[in-house]
Length: 186
Image (cartoon, rainbow, N blue to C red; front, side, top):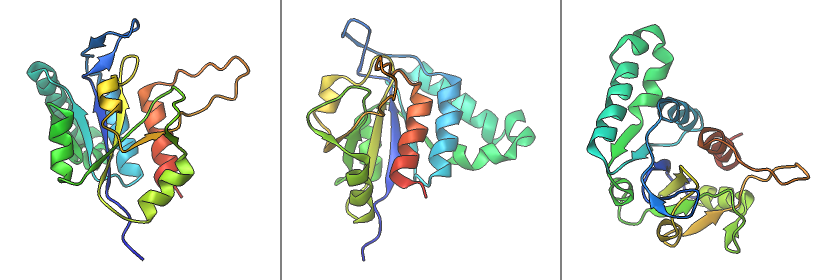
């Protein structure tokens, strides 16, 4: 039996879609930094990449990480330190993939149904079967740009709403936690 794949996550802030479908760069939010870090650590992901092309935004994220590692936050709530050690702040998706190795696969997520979707069951089995590292790509704003989706080895199925009206607009923090649980949870 082979070793399960290494799995990491990336919160991508560029290229992202806006409400009208244009390409934009979104802002980093404090909650996305530590909430997704904690979920990723809980489910055993190796890394959580925060992907942002703007240096000032990466510096902000580094200050938040340092607050939870070395500052008052880390002293007051030491349980936040291990997840923050897994946080990698990078300027591009290419940089995140490079850190995982030359054979790393990008798997994307979306709230939209796509014909090429992979079920969570099949993706979970692909992780268990072993192979190259996987980077789970999550979008901000109104979702990942087509150029990112086209690079993906797999596109995971959306998290379906049981609502009759089809409402499906989770925060990226919630979607990440649900995805991690479905792929790696007990």
